[in-house]
Length: 449
Ligand SMILES: [Zn+2]
Image (cartoon, rainbow, N blue to C red; front, side, top):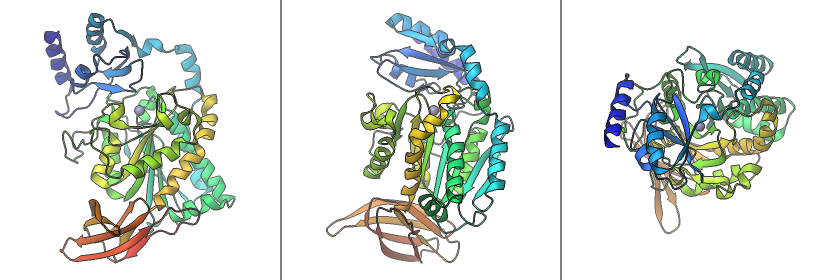
């Protein structure tokens, strides 16, 4: 077995042509009925293999061509059944289901139509190109949409795994829903859009979606391709996939405080960390947000696999190089991963039902970005800020963060907080502010410095 292992590792090295950075090539997918997780440690130790959706019967394993032979050999010695995920598909039925989904150009048309219908609140732009040259589109939804206003910034990203399509469709339906309700004068939606800068990225992996596969045009798993603070710990784009680089550059330009990314394969909300057993710094807050999302979605609330429809990422299975951990570790942008559907690519006719199940949770989650506080300088200063809870008896440090462009905002649990701000010239100022649960009319909570 050891000889085979060594050979396999060698072939993986040969595949990593771009750099030593893990690219997690996902040309083959297999399901291992390994209920007792006998092989999981060995597979995890192979750096370049991807494990996903660990459940009570087993888990998915993705890797480069040839991984199936290697897995079959190991599994046969332990009496573990393996099925090739490709063989599992009813290809004819899938072709039918696939045919009903909009193509990337039809999605582009739809987004352009919405922009021309609602030009005051809807702005479509591209943050870069996929490996095959498709635009990676983002929609900004806000009043005075051409102006960068002093409002909390929120984002949704869907479809980073090309074969997990429900999220992409949810984003299009959400954009249609919010614009129509805004135009009709719905007070909840109006208040949200008028006081928030919302960014929605429907398809981070359009090449994967077009080919109906997990990886991008280079077969790379994008949710293993972000900087990982427990391994490479460098927030640098070089050597990463084009789609990862586009999202990294976009994040660096903005000041997101709350985000989520959508997946498929099961139904639950997965909160950080994914890569470490340590407690997440804002654990109570992230649990609260996750529970709130899950409790309105029937498949999550009634889940037998995940109590209440939520799970900590690391408790479920370790993910290195995932987007949600990267987002908070480097930018203080709290992000969860939302698994929307057991079937990754369900029949298109079921899409409205998924939207009905998730619509209110998606909107409610967005409004939670207003439960926070921030500050604004007159000039585009940079520096760092320490946030402490200002309890009566004991001060507790929430964290230390950097800021740029003279602006900072953070979502927090309700309470009183002291912000101690040090600009890049060493000048210090501090203020105390109150964070409350925001219902209804949001007033962006910024202190002018
Ligand atoms: Zn996924």
